[in-house]
Amino acid sequence: MKIHIRLVGLLLLSFLQGKAQAPADRPNILWIVSEDNNTSLIGCYGNPYATTPNIDQFAKESILYKNAFSTAPVCAPSRNTLITGMYPPSLGTEHMRSTYPVPSFVKFFPKYLREAGYYTTNNAKKDYNTTDQVDAWDESSDSATYKKRKPGQPFFAVFNLFVSHESSLHKPLPSLHHDPEKAPIPPYHPRTAEFKHDWAQYYDKVETMDQQVGKLLKELTDAGLTENTIVFYYADNGGILGRSKRFMYESGLHVPLVIHLPKKYAHLAKAKAGSQTDQLVTFLDFAPTILSLTDIKIPDYMQGQAFLGSQQKPERQYAYGFRGRMDEAIDLSRSVRDKKYRYIRNYLPHKIYGQHLDYLWKAPSIRSWEAEYKAGRLNDIQSKFWQSKPAEELFDVEVDPDNIHNLASDPRYAKELVRLRKVNDQWLRQSNDVGFIPEAILSKIASQTPLYDYAHRGKYNTNRIIETATLASSRNPSNAGELIKRLADTDPVVRYWAAIGCTILRPASAKTSLQKLLQDPEAAVQVAAAEALYQLGEKEASIAALKKAITNSSRLVRLQTLSVLQAMGHDASSLADQAKEIVTRASAGYSVDTAYDVRAAQNLVEALNQ
Image (cartoon, rainbow, N blue to C red; front, top):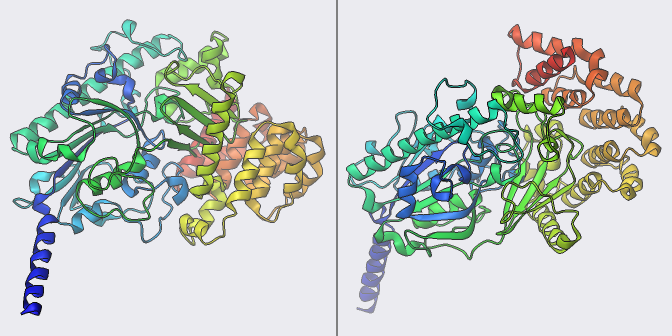
């Protein structure tokens, strides 16, 4: 009898647990994702010039997040964060439009939803910056919709709204709804005719995007699904004009986020409908949050934390951001944001902010900005974009939302600077940030093993590499002696960063060691040494090494070389034929892995012809 009672009890418990986890009891999730717009372009975030009545009304009935951040200021790496719940510099997926693999245990999170009975759809952009996992979706296409699911089946549906994408500014429109003369233009942009037109045109595009948001919300209502569906509206990164998308400021990383939870699910959020919250959230948190809302266990490997649902964690203190290679423009920066300050650490500070990037230069406004700089008609704030970077930047975002007053050298903010510097350094080490491996070397490692696995098997000397990169980029002459010693390190990544430090600091005593590195086993180190020797006046040796590197079989070595040549101006003229050959081969249809080295070669040829 006791055994029988116990058996019945176990069966009843199993039934109740199964009932609690039944898909029919779980909410539907709808993601509405706009492209390339930050908070300043949305009316409910305080901009009366913006025309976004649908999002504004939606915000009145939902929770508006004032401190939501993309991890990267560009789409593909930020979308990698969204789909994996992991930090791309940990995975080796930080560089724009790369397809380096992730570990086998990392699933695109919609897979967990499918396994739990959800119907998952994506309409239609993926751009996940790694090898695709097509089984994450029941359907991913321009016609994908939750309407195709089985009766009663819960859904997770994503709609990506492309109308606000950067490409919407490539062709000026003849007539505009928003008045260009009244367009609010940030102080770092000159008020050229092109800027006024591009800003007004983009507000028009955001208005169209808002109409599409309204249509999707109406479809949900018409289908009778609003009381069972949690809706997210957010943008995939900031943008869109120069110094926003791709850049580490509020304009590039601060994104709108509005979430609506129907009454039956209101208990899954701490904030109430119709409220605004200053809680810090980041794209790192989105995947675990969706799993938390749908009562699916969050995998231990995910680096984010749920901010809604049954598994939500205490509020995070910091939001982390990163920048790696953006198309053909090589750079490396990291950022930490709390509720008051944004800290930026630039690890290649000798490179100017405004490196020529073909896709960005398609907008008339950026070309007008460059022309104004060359003509000497910009003020100091507007000119900074065309100059090299400081090692550190610190902004009080409450009083300086445009991030134009760098407080890093102000002794009144020394305490905050030291605090955030330490937070950044700790996160780099904790997350095993492999972004410090030059991509020409990183790609070879990735062809053998995922970078995450490589780092966690002890093959990546995290502490020494980050320490060397920090010494190299600090612009502190007292670091020169140690960097020269590290030019002979056994680790090629350390040698690379030591050479970068010599480019920045230009210690004359490094010449002999740098000359030896022109024969380094790693071409990426050879190019870094050649760059440093050029800065030390050894132009003949430098250009000879670069002439060899520009014909390297690795497109990433060629790209690194072209990046160095671009900064040399007309001293690079002797390699113009080699650059033209890269462009000619691509035009003739020969095999080229991607177009980025071709773009860089074309940029160099055009610059040399000016």
